[in-house]
Amino acid sequence: MNEHDLDTQPSYDAELLTPDQLARKLNITRRCLSTWTTKKLIPVIRIGNTCRFDLQKVKAALAKHEQPEDSH
Figure 1 (cartoon, one colour):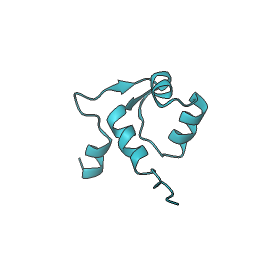
Figure 2 (figure 1 turned 30 degrees about the horizontal axis):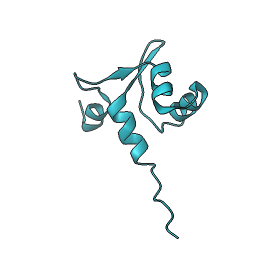
Figure 3 (figure 1 turned 60 degrees about the vertical axis):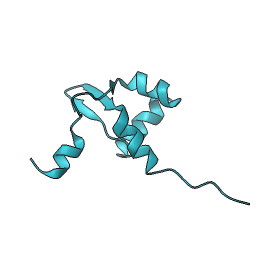
């Protein structure tokens, strides 16, 4: 097991959400969520046809894309 494997594995106390749950929580459409997942902007856990999202890791991934506010 390498360091990257540890980053992609959910912790035992992780809050794992379905795509519908995460889309509602982020106030985005399922299509937007699918796009972000396909573009690897957010991490996803896939087992067969089932996918789940570790909320803490999704939040961390989104924080990396945060833009500073424009100051006038």
